[in-house]
Image (tube, rainbow, N blue to C red; front, side, top):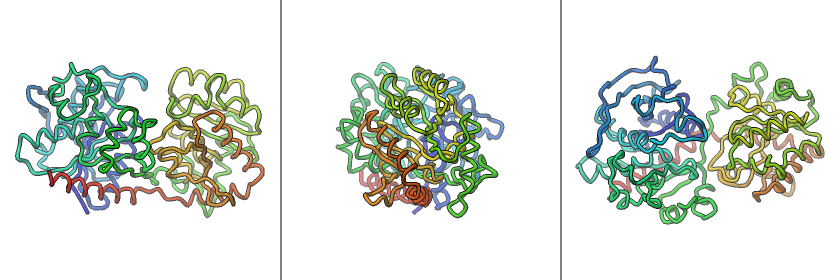
Length: 493
């Protein structure tokens, strides 16, 4: 199977990234292209993206709908290491800014509703400009949630050939809600908002628009697809997702093993390692300890965490003042910990305080790609105490690097990490169920006890972890099946 696919996205590596969405869009596009599909990407030209290697293909690309019109420009580039075209929608008025969604990671631009409705509408007009008609419009998360609505409205107004819409939910917690007073920006009336079922307490909900109006819906793991149909994980949209469950499929994200693979990882040269030759990991542990200011020791287990420091990621359970596990675990166990990330101010402040007070804890508040690779390679255990995790990527990286994940049994973490059975076989990590400091601490202490008391089992777990394969091939095959089903649904309307 092969299709003409337009990926509509607010992010794609290496151009713009705030999370796993950017990795997924680029990696899936490459895999689909390599399997024979004609894949192209449309995204905004943010102010931090250089135009030097881009080609201006239309300085007067007009995005219009009803009475709304915006004069833009259209640039074309290529996804690195591929021939995949990436089209950039250029509007200095809306995109020439230093942030993707806001000036900081925890703030939003007040005109985001218009910025991203413009992107969704431009997707329909792109094909005419480049003389290319997509069969599949694949939209990603709330910024592109209006695209399926525009497709339906377009079908009503024209006799154009049928295409299908696929909408991927990367994180249901971010929904894109905007005042109904602002509907003229999007060329949409309140009547249309009501007719296409994306009203949300007198607001428009862009994520809801995508869920309600797409031919097929995907999310990034089978367990998360089930979880979001429940009240605990549905963020208010569980009734809709349950009603549309026939059209909802969970597909685990793959990993780009050209980037995350200890055998060829450029960040860990000259200590690259593999299952057949694992010695480099020991050298990298020493390198990590040295760079993070920790005692050089091969005997102590080194625990790590790389994360956005936000509630979803379990930071209350990690270091909440008065009840977080971090301080007690460091003081009461012969262990070392490294933490890398940025996020909520209270958490950054608390982690800095603990890092200064505890000799066996090293904290770096930043985003650092080199250090991320070194941590994955040099650590023994990787902590992901997430309250919910649609898919997760770091646990997949950790498996490949023989760094055993310690995760809560939720979403993609439950789908990709296996606890040891009663005979201490088949384990690739350690899991816990309850959202509580006590449950998280018990999992940490279990991993610690295995390190000291069952070293042979730890080595077996590392081998099995490194044998896991989460490459994009199988996931891309699942997306091709979804595209086929979406086209069948669209042709039957």
